[in-house]
Length: 84
Image (cartoon, rainbow, N blue to C red; front, side, top):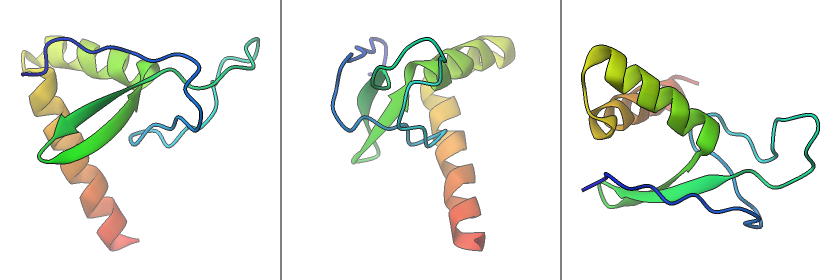
């Protein structure tokens, strides 16, 4: 179950599979992107801490689990990839 996410700092080549960032967006920090890797539908998905926080807020707002929100977001991304 996806209740506990552990974020990794200073991970080389970190990237977010949702926002596609590869660098920390904060202008005062020249650090790697802080991410967590989760297994979802037999795939590893890397999510930055910024996207995770947005997902968490949205999941509470619509009263759905983060797992459901990730599933929906992945489906949308797959549709967009196919159409581009």
